[in-house]
Amino acid sequence: MLRVFLHSWPLLLGLMLLMVGNGLQGTLLGVRGPIEGFSTFQMSLIMAAYFLGFLGGSRATPELIRRVGHVRVFAALGSLISAVLILYPSIANPWAWAVLRVLIGFCFSGVYVTTESWLNNSATNETRGQTLSLYMIVQMVGIIAAQGLLVLGDPSGFILFIVPSVLVSVSFAPILLSVSPTPAFDMTKPMSLRELFHNSPLGCVGSFLLGGVFSAQFGMAAVYATQAGMELAQISIFIAMIYVGALVLQYPIGWLSDRMDRRALVMAVAAMGGVASLVGIWSGSAFTVLLGVAFLMGGAANPLYALLIAHTNDFLEVEDMAAASGGLIFINGLGAIAGPIVTGWLMSTMGPGGYWLFIGLLMLALAAYAAYRTTQRPAPSSHETGSYAPVMPSASPVAVEAAQEYFIDAQDETNIEH
Image (tube, rainbow, N blue to C red; front, side, top):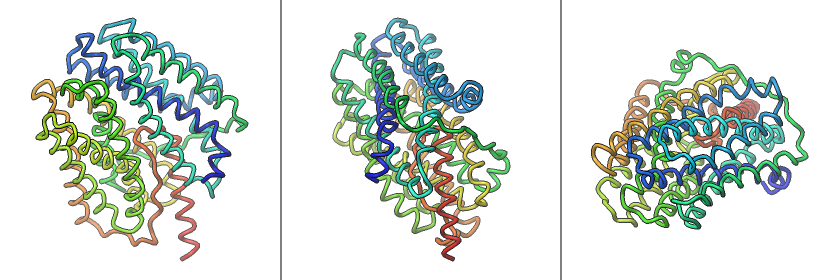
């Protein structure tokens, strides 16, 4: 893995700075919105707007790259991100913020597509699994580090909006100055949603439900923490703990994934996250308990995405795996758009506990559906399944297709051995 890091460190450094900038702006808006007098439901619409833009960007960016190339797309979208980050504190209007969130979601999606293209192009069949692991670690470290920056300034001022703008601008330098050549870009055409559902009902239903969970986790955690009366330092620790849990539990879950029926593991992990979330409802303002709940919820929700992709691949032919990624991302994106809106409505109706109720119900619904699916067809034998590859719900189509390529390579090696 050290060799992979030494070869790709400029790209990984740039990606980490992007994640720090994105993670900080997401949390900061959740804190700044109530200061500006925005209601919880207005904040939910603002947060949902990011995922609408992200889904649109993931579908439009490939065509933009084909027309004008990686470098121009990267520079244009990056410039827009820096501008939007400065505009937030200048325009204290919820509808303006929603428009800006659509724009920044679109731009971040496009930037991720571009940078992940470079990263995937630098990987070989032998190093792709390690590259994906490093990429996931970099994402987590970036988001966790972003929460530490939150306490360094006044959220009612301008400086905390300037910091992510600078970080995003600086992130371009190591990426654009990397010795890695500009990659050829060719996205696989996704298979139809009907065909994808026929092959993996759990993969489709799970991706939709998990989209709602992740968007609530990523978009509404700071809004919840503010409404629950946490201080600024507590908010940063609480949100960081969600991603610490994801980082710590990703690999044990991945190890188990390659050694048991993945549907049973989806059921167990989702049930763990669901029960932990229900504990969050009853914990009130007990901060230590909430940290434990955040750790378990984040540790369950984030690895589940990669687990669902691995499960879907278990029932696909090798040549169909890459095509399935587009459908899974689209389904996940639809769930992500709805997540903050429903969460905001519940929090407006029943208070901060609505945050945990929404996540808990979705996780328990996923656990129940996974249990049902175990009764519908037998699990494939372990030598017929591909290897688990870590990939985050926030990954662009490029990273997911890289994970699919890793699955295909692993499947080919398994077939040779048997």
